Length: 414
Image 1 (tube, rainbow, N blue to C red):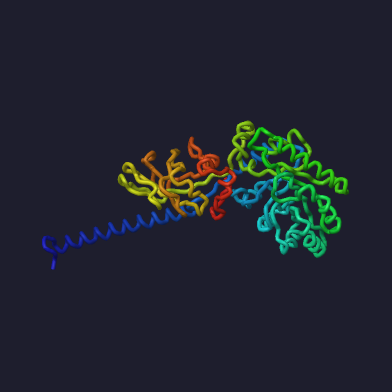
Image 2: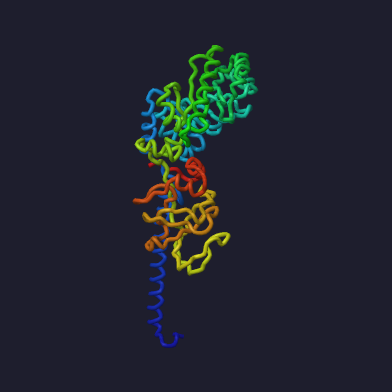
């Protein structure tokens, strides 16, 4: 029987209209899903943009400070978080050698490059053979490692290549000068190990105007080179300077033939003092970290935000959920103190930074919508979030800020 008040024909028309509306809604949802899948393929949840132009600019600017020396790009720590594969590929024809930390990093490099490479860190005894096979120059600082190097060289029919690390008043890895004669004697008993260079590290040349300690280090390093020369080790490659040493020391000294350029090639200054002194060098940040708004909603006054109940809204607040967190390298110490960029405006982080997400206050951006770009590091419009700013807010340095960005995030060369 027809429902009261409706004829059989009216019911049919109504049903057909409902079916047409449902079909239209289904098509709209399907088209939206297709569009979202396309967006997803074009842009992941988050990505690290690497500026080819800025990277090459920085290397060339730094090289110009002392054109006569060989430039080694330091790409340890996933190229200071920028992506070892991407950075080494871009610099293959721009630098003379690469500096890495360990054998894992060398294995990655050797997939695409046979350029000269030095391992600055520790190589376990069982891995020495592979390091020699992959033609690495190894840091040498302990004569107890010589037998493994000699054995690997003999087995492969090629010398184990080393640079001797001098601990010139830094107190880390290296041979202290008083032990150098004994180390030289041990070297001479292992002819399959070839000493090709000698190096040291400055302790503090970037954060001080008192260079007395740096000068004492230089004098100690020079005295060790003389001891090596007297023992028959002449014409060794020598290096002491990183980016800061390149700025402060190498231009005047002109004694070393290699420099290890790390933080500077990524557009970061070693210190605020050197940023001021070398402003005309115009180093440009290479990394830009972006994601998207996952959700936008409005919370009432007095509403808590995040774990620990560290933030309560003081007014009706439009918030956005950012799908990045401390597992991605966005430090938990940035809770309630960080800013990010949305539509060219600074938006403060509110509440705790969680493992995979955090909230931001969107009241300054009333037209913000889900899928809008969020910049965690880098520029958007006229605004910029710098590694130095982030570092100041959590009590660390720009080096750490970029190096801790998760290697799982996609690197994209722009």
